[in-house]
Length: 258
Image (cartoon, rainbow, N blue to C red; front, side, top):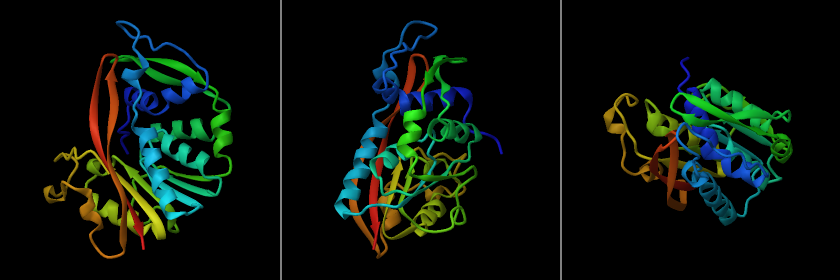
């Protein structure tokens, strides 16, 4: 399988998901570039912490203490990490990611306490690196047994329904978004919550059927048995080279399975 995540994209995911955490942990390494130093606020994305606050708010509404979760397309695992460290009740986490490069670095971040040099973008074709002591991250997640599945997600990816199901900004990169959402709903136990986000960047190169390009992901939850909890529009920032990035608007919804 071709890896959709190249080295530059890996660096961009790392910056967007983890730079603020690196700063919180005390590393002040400057992000040098081919032109000049780049400020952090141009690099890191507010999306991940904001969507985690959204997830916490919805779980609090239900008064539940989740024991298991599934994240489809976790990239470098910031949401899986925040979920794990926020809920000591969690015992099992399933992460499904088809990119070998992303899954390898996910493991190095959250499952390997040896530390690692993670990349940032210096230019279009060059990466710098920041050493991250991963031991504190691994400790925060050690109560969770992670199952890392390096493949495309479908109805057969996990063996049993989970309490929390998360799929953020993935379905508009799939051949059949409706099949993915059906599987997410099926993999959520009764009383559990599905979190779905989409930037609506539908493209013919991904979709098999153009009719699947919906303009509101709430349409996936119109049948009986799904209780709407919250929805939000959250900015999502992703850097492509040292002084160029794109800003998306991600529509996030949460539904509880009755």
